[in-house]
Each structure stands twice: as structure tokens, then as C-alpha cells.
Image 1 (cartoon, rainbow, N blue to C red):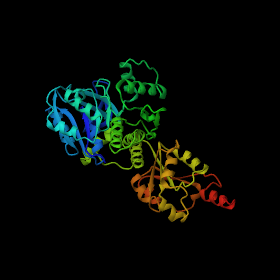
Image 2 (tube, rainbow, N blue to C red):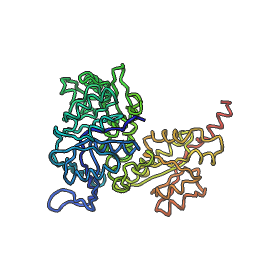
Image 3 (spheres, rainbow, N blue to C red):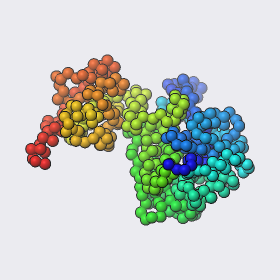
Length: 471
């Protein structure tokens, strides 16, 4: 662990999600009427990055500028329970972004507040926080904090002593020389490179590499990691070939909300560097954390968790978050939830055929997978051949599988009590066999469907054949 806290420096915004239902149009204009609206505020900008770092149990100090207005006071109330706040005066109103959503779809966004940080006293708390930093994340949202003369002077001296990660903004300030890592997204990298005189057209890995190298050279940076959304992140550190950290795809049902993914990436990369990790590890971990963040519902989920529990740290394992999110989205859209279950120890053609057929019965397919302990109780001490983590990873890679859930019991009954699938699928080899979960499925309004299976395809048969061959 670092000797000092992780210090986040940057502009804080108040983000507000207004979430409701839209079932009709306004009688005097062709716009939806949002009923039963629920307001969910959260810190945005540097505030979100600091909150995500603090949610991992790390000591975090946030240096920012706040106005003494109602949105500024709301931000203090949201941030102070989770981290130390070192704030100086923001001139003008607190920037606020209000997103109106219905059925998971953004309807409109309202931006108000044009406050900016200006040169002037920052107070001893800010100076002491930077002097004691173990690592620094600069989260620039173009509102003036990173251009403050006193703060910039302190950052320049810090860059030679502790890791400094700079998450830039096209309207923000250039990173200080010696910055360990800059983390623009693809669009930001293109705009920043163009502003520095580099006319590098196109999109993809090759242009991103050239832009990253140009920016690193122009500003004297150790490395630049260009985040590529679903493509992961590309690290260029001057050591030769760039390093690509691929992202795992978001849930296949619906469009994933990626709001705040860049903050999540930058926060995790800073944590790794603070703990002594190298740049490739920092970028890889940043991509992994950002993927988890998007899978769990991104910034909107942070707002919901703050509203429900007062804590941003409540998050289920990624595969669980995926599954329940898929189920919720499907039901919200009036779709049919299909589920099936089994060991899936050695995935074979029979499994694939069943999953393909099952997926056609509805709008999403959830696969319930026996845990390793559950498989051993059913199949014996030599099973499973493949551990649950690997079995889940293979299943999730199939286009017909929307999500997976692992259960530890002998039957999936307790899981199905919560899942409540509209259709529960089993293979036709279960014809005439009493299913212990049948009552649970039907009691919750679901039905059981048996599908054809490929004769002679089973994990047990595959394993016995290999033993017969002496392999």
C-alpha cells in the first residue's frame, strides 16, 4: 500500500438521474410524459472517480472547487461520508447534468451551472493533502481546477515523486511533465493530438497508437493509454510495441450504459500504480474494473446504490450483476425470460444445440450452472473436469447465452425461486422423469419445456470413451 492517500484532483459536477416510466405522449406536444419519476443524485466528474476509489476501502482525499449553493451542498453531503474533502471556492454556480430516463432509455439531458475555479487561495488543507499524497489522479473536466496556478505548481513537483495519472479533457489543461500515465478516450486523443498539430486521421489501433506516441512526446509523459470503449485500452509507453488490454463484452441484451467507465478505468489504474504495479498491469486492471462497472449498470447504478444503501460499494459479483440486469431489462421490455441449467462440464455439440434451441423460445437465456461442490455430489469425486469459473467463461462466450448464474445446491430450486423464468428448458432425456424444480417454476407462473437432444452426446460418454482408449 502507498505511504499516503490516493489524492484525486479535479472538477466535480452534480449528476442527477430522473428515472420514471413513459406510457403516453403529452397532449399538447409529441413528447413522452414521465410518470412516477424518481430523482437519483450522484457526484460526477472527479467526484465519481474519487467515490469509486473510496468504495474499494482506500483512503482518498478529493481536491476540488465547490460553490456555496444548493447543488454544492448536496455534493458535500454525497461525498463526505466516504472520503476526505479538501475544497476551495468555485466562482459561479455548481455545474449540474440532469438525465431524464424512461425504461432504461435516455429521453433528454439538461446542463445548468457554469461555475469555474479561478486562481486564488486554496487553503492549507489542499496543500497538505498534495504534500502527503501516495499517488495522484487528475480528473480534468475543463472547469478550471487543474489550471489553478498553486495546484499546478504542486503537481509539477509531485510528478517526480509519486505516480500521477492524468484523465484529460479537450477543454482542460495539459498534463504536467513527468506524468506517469495519461488516459484519454479515442475521441479525446484525436482532438488533443490535432490541437498539438498532429493530423492523424482514421480510427482503430494504428491511428490510436500514433496519437498516443505523439501526445507522450509532446508533453513529456511516460505513457499514454487510449481507452477504446468495448475494445479495451491501448498502452504506449515508448518500450516498443503497444500493449492492448481487451475488454470483455457487456451483456448482450440491450445497449450497455458506459457513463463513468473512463473514471472507473482511471481510478483503478491509479490504485495499481500507487501499490507499485507496472503500467501494463495498471491498464489491464483498469479495463477489467471498467468492464465490471459497465456490467453492473455504470454510473446510474452508483446513484441507485447511494439512494438505497448510502454506499457506492454494494455490488454483486460481475456474472450475477449481468444476469439480474438482463432479467430486469427483459421484463421491463415485456419480453420472455428463458432459463436452463446443468453442469456443462465438457461443453459439446449436444449442449450447444440445446442452448441454441432454448434461446429461440424467448428474449434472453440465463444458464444456471452447478458449482464444483454440487457437481461432485452429483457425479462423483472425479468431477468436474473443468472448474466452475472456466465453465462459466466458455458459456458466456456463446452468442446464445445472455448470462450465467452459479448455484451450490443439489437442485436449482432456490435460485429459480428468485429467477422466476417464464420458460425452464431441459433436454428430452428428462421425459417422464420427475423434476424437483417443476413445482417452483410453475408456482411462479413459468412453464417447463423439453427440447430434443443429440443422441450419444454427453460428458460422461466422452470421458468413458477416452478411458477406454487409454488416454
